[in-house]
Image (cartoon, rainbow, N blue to C red; front, side):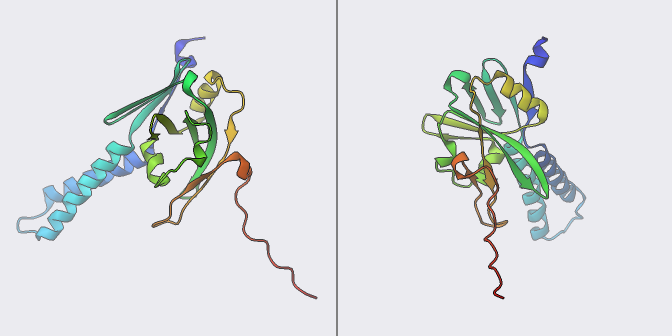
Length: 196
C-alpha cells in the first residue's frame, strides 16, 4: 500500500478559518475605502473586525496527520504529538453546528477524558487540543478518510462512543457525555399521562 494511503491528513476548522478570513478582509477593506474624516468609532470598528477575524483564523486553523507512529497536530505556536504507546482512549462524537452534524474524534492520553475538567469546551474544540499537566487530549475534525486512517492505525480495540451536549448559545459551556452516560442523546422529560 502506498505511503499516501497509509496516512491521513485533515485541515482543522475550515469553516471557522474561512469566516475569520472574510471578517479580516472586510475589516481591512473598510479601513482602506473609508473616506477621510470618518469617525474614529467607525475606524475602530473596522480595526477590531480585522483583528478579530485574523486572530480567529489563526487560532482555529491547523493541520492534523495520523500514521503508524501516532497522531500529530500543527497549530500556530503549537505542535502536539501523541504516540500510539501513550494513547489510552479514542472516542468518536458529533457536534451540531448550524443544523449540521459534524464528526469529531477525541484522542487522549487520559483513560476517561470526558471526566476531566474542561472549562469552555466549545472554545477548546476550536483550538483542537488541551493539556492537563502531563496529559494531552486532541479534539480533531474527522472526515471519513481521516477517521478510516486513524482507526486503521489505532492499536486500541475498544474505542469508545460518546456524545457532545451543547451549551446555551451565548454563555453556556458544552460538555462531553461518556459511554457510561448512555449511547443516546439526552432525552427530554417524559410527558405526563393525561388522566381519563
